[in-house]
Every structure is written in C-alpha cells, then in structure tokens.
Amino acid sequence: MTVGQLANRCRVAVKTVQFYAEEGLLQARGGSTEAGYRLFTEDDVADLRAIRSLRALGFSLEAIRGMLAGSADPRSTAQFQLELVDAQLRALRRQRAAIAAAISSDADPDVRRRLQLAQAAASLGAMERDAAIERFMDRVRKGAPLGSDSKIRQIVAMDIPDELTDDQLEAWLELSGLIEDDSFVGVLHAQHEPFKSDDPAAAASRAAFAEAVGPIIAEAASALHDGCDPNCERVRALVVRWVSEFARGVGRRDDAAFRRWLVDYSRRTNDPRIQRFWELVATMKGRPASVSPFVAAQQLLIDGLEAMQS
Image 1 (cartoon, helix red, strand yellow):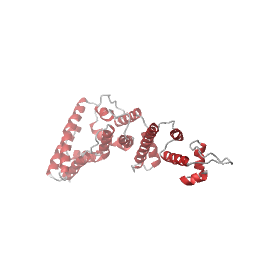
Image 2 (tube, rainbow, N blue to C red):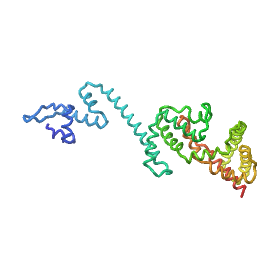
Image 3 (spheres, one colour):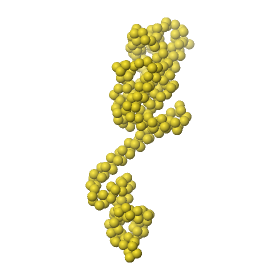
C-alpha cells in the first residue's frame, strides 16, 4: 500500500507516516514503486499502530526503535518508562502544590508574587529549609541567642526529613508562608512580650505558668466539648483559676485593670495561625497533625472573663 493508503488505514496524517519512515521506525517492507515511492505491508500497519501506542505512553523514538528492532528488552524499556512517568507525576504534584499554596490565601492580593514565592519554597533543599526556619526563630526572638539544645529549636527544627513526601511538601509550602508573614511574627512577639525577662527566676516562673495553665486549657476544652457556654459555673471556675495563674505568671495583681488587659491581650494573641503552625510542623515531621482545641478552649475562657466583667 502507498503512504496515503497506510495513513488512511491507521487514521493518521501522511506527514506522520513519512516522518516515522524517515526516522527508520517504519521499514516500508513492500519496497518501492518505479518512481521511488515507498510501499508498505501489513507488518508496517502493525508497526505503525505499535508506534502510536508507545508514543501515546510517552516512549522516546529511540526506545521505540530499539523495541521494534528487537535490540532492546521490552520489559526493561517499559520499566524505565514507568520510572520516568513516576518522576513526571511527582513533578506535576509539586507544581500543583505550589500553585494551590499560592492561591489559597487572600492575605496577599498579588498572585504572581505568591506564585514566585511558592515555587521558590518548593525548590528549597533540606539545608535551605533549615536555614529558613532558623531565620524565623531568630525573628521571633528578635536576635536573642537560641542554644542548640533549646526545646523550641528541637520541637520545630529537628527530625524534618531531607526528602519530603507530597503531604510534607504541601505542609512546607503553607508553613513557609507563615514564617515569612510579618503579621504572624508580630502576634508571636505580642504573645511572649509580657513574659520577657533574662532573670533566671522569671524563666522558672514562665515554666511554672505553662505547667499550671495547661490543665486549665484542657479542662476548658472538655467543658466546650460538653456544651458549656461562657456563663456556666464550670467555665466561671476555670476562668478564676486561669486569671489567677496568668497574673502570677506575668507578675501582676489580679484586679480589674489586669482583667481588662488580659481580655485585650488574649484576643490579640489567641491566633488560629499559631495552632496551624504546630499542626504543620507535626506533618513535616511525619507525625499525625491532630487538630488541637487550644484556640477554641482559650476563646471560651476569654468569653467567660468578659461575661464576668459585664
């Protein structure tokens, strides 16, 4: 059959058949006419169909040539192609994660800028990610030194794998946006401001405060789960304990002025992004990112304190 007949038989363009013939993939087993035009056989039909199938699966012309000629092991060639497709899929998932991260927030209206930042974050290696986290911790501490054995350093920066899974990459893209967000860093500064002191006694006081407040927050979460509102006696009792421990922790007297300050301070610093930060850190470390009730529980205490003041 002529090139036109073969093209019609396989429903492809004549130029496609000519291209594969010139590349040596189609042998034109029927010889040629007196005018020098190639002639094709049923074997060429089978080869052309095989070529189209393999090209649709992404095989290179060189790989197809080897498979048709019998010089390449089809299983090994297919395995190589499978690995190539897997690599392409990983690249596509990472591209998708970067684009999704760029359009997920309305905080920055410049989508082009967010796309650039997300792509930059996605392309960072392990050492560069570690450096970004170190810069974030330095910003939070306003340049104050943070020892290598610091608990916060160990919690945030240690045990993050060099190679990230798709879920970890998505978490990193969101986390990188958070740690570069000046407003988020500002909330952390405000949260720690009342407790700042280089006095060793103050450090002990902060530790005692954290140990005392933790159970109160846990009980508030339980009360919230049980349907308690800010006016119920159970919440009021927790508020009294919470205010007392806070006053002791920041070295102030529990009076009306302090309670007004505590409401304002807590509303400014009870930011859901802090909770999200720790969820993302957990995902980066390959741990379950369980949603903590901390923000909602603390909000119940804030609302309870306001209700007591009204």
